[in-house]
Length: 353
Image (cartoon, rainbow, N blue to C red):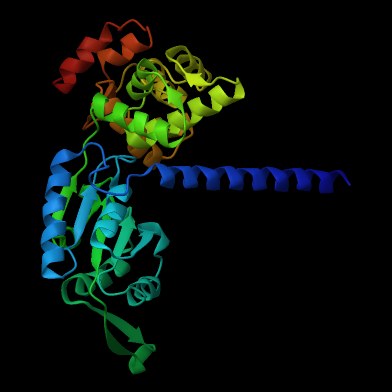
């Protein structure tokens, strides 16, 4: 009987988690801009995309294949949806790890309509065999399917509808040259300026029906790691805090109290960011330390450290990647109020820093 009750509790928790995750995704989609005009930031990319889209529409052709790269949460997926809307075509969304077999890719490609967009997130994680099938699909609009096995196997070539592939990656160096060279345009998304993030916060607050003070929006922007995804997440959490306390407006004090509860400090660092810095400084004496060793000491995946935590810490001068490993910089010591040890200067000299 106890087991059944526990199972029910676990099932209930799972159901609640599923609902919350679904709601988060719904809110995330609701907050996304739908046109280039609404999209805040990345001005150079928007100008180029506007030209590409207008020219393709005048020719009545699909736009050329596009590759977006940059840190997670900067808007690669959002821009892809905007392109599809501006072109008036459908978009199929998938990811590199999700396409396990050549047949999976073949099924996706053959189900596209003329002019449609295929968006592949984490395209650098495509299997080699799947990637090779993409080459003729991107260049010639055909896909080769092997039918049968052994001596009786034969290749069947299928014509595909005209389509645009939009790839997104956080690791452009992990893409093979043959795949990278088949994209007509490649755009790097940069971290956003504080003012751009503030405009995103104000827009999201308006869409969520939140009355927010200007200095409150500024504070959220300041702690959002220059990343729209983080900014929108914090707006939602601050809204939850205000509603839970029956507050009709979000003031600077409300934001500070909510983010303190979330353990997000004045520089936008979360608990794991600070743990990472503390490990490098206290356990590994400021570095250098290899990322695998660092990941093992934190109980995190190497991929998570490289893709989630490091980009912001490197961008803001807390750590540095060196050939011998990760090194904590002076800003990290100051942020954690830890004195810089005497051996630190010797280490810097040895690394040529």
